[in-house]
Image 1 (tube, rainbow, N blue to C red):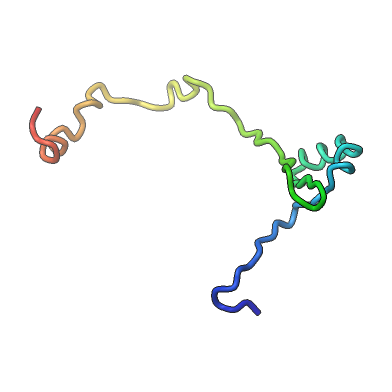
Image 2 (cartoon, one colour):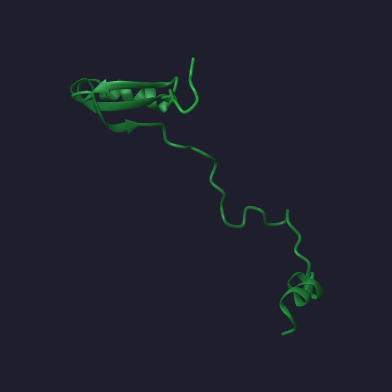
Length: 91
């Protein structure tokens, strides 16, 4: 049972600690595991030194990809002009 004020060490279910020597000998397998979503901590003498994590491979948004999907009115820079003047004063 955790008492009030007691520190609780967070755990990550998909994280494994591997010592540096084993990481050097098993690098290819560790990279495959990281690419599959696992986080691997590389330690030397029990002290964490580095993390092997998967790269984010989201879809890149290209400039102009919303062309034809978004309509901007001709007077977009005058929208809410009265409200802006009321907040900040006249030009």
